[in-house]
Length: 318
Image (cartoon, rainbow, N blue to C red; front, side, top):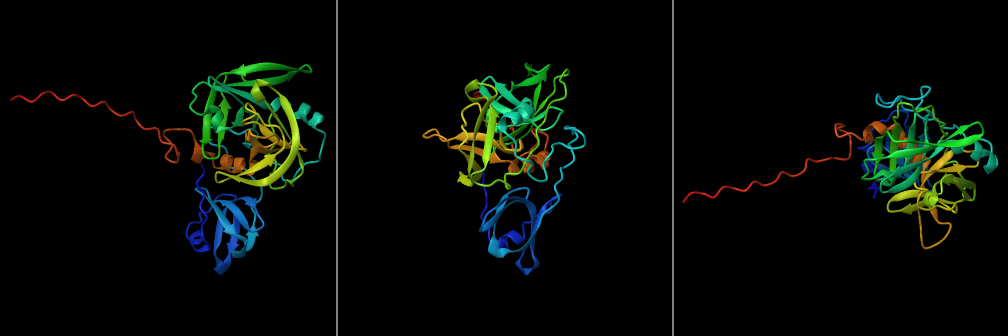
């Protein structure tokens, strides 16, 4: 569960922390909060300030200054492709038919397998960095990624078994993986879009492996942009989502990722949910703070040494 704090304006003033390429929200009394705007609601803004998510009432805001779209430089352990770790569209592209989009971007959607099950994922760049759900790889040490390479007009299946966990955010159910097979080629990547730019009722579609049926395409509409569940805001969609879709992309009709599919309500149909892509961008931009490493002091997860066995004491001499 994500612990979000509903704070008053007075509390906000003392906890703002400047972030690189962040948005600035001007408040009354010449105060300001700096962070990443995740969602703009009619009565408030949802802002990521790096260590928590804040809800700022509209009545306390006097102005908003948004940063230009840019990406954080790559980590030393995560070289970027073409100078950028991922690509993000400045504005939604032109609408196209789903059939042509699937042919263009389907190669970038993968199947993530573990001994405990399977899920989906998608490439962020040609160097083999991909996104999936945390719950897909949770507790697993053996991870493989199945990719479909397009060769001579056909799709050839290839399985990569040298997969490293780069960063995780358990609370938002996001994981960043990297294929490290020596003979791995350059991969087809997908551009990230904007869930904020979506309108309710707009068409969306998903590609994934529901119940192991790889490369399944389902289509629907965006039912709502701000469905709150367990303290998180999700995109709700009528697009069919089933086990195996987890970690796969939800696309707009321009072929841009607007969310990560991660769950559904089983007692009904057409009740699927996806993590908004704005949260994914914030995770990637601050991925050093979520690095999967026991040596990282910023890592929110601690791996403690196992408890030592209590040694039996020798009986005392009488």
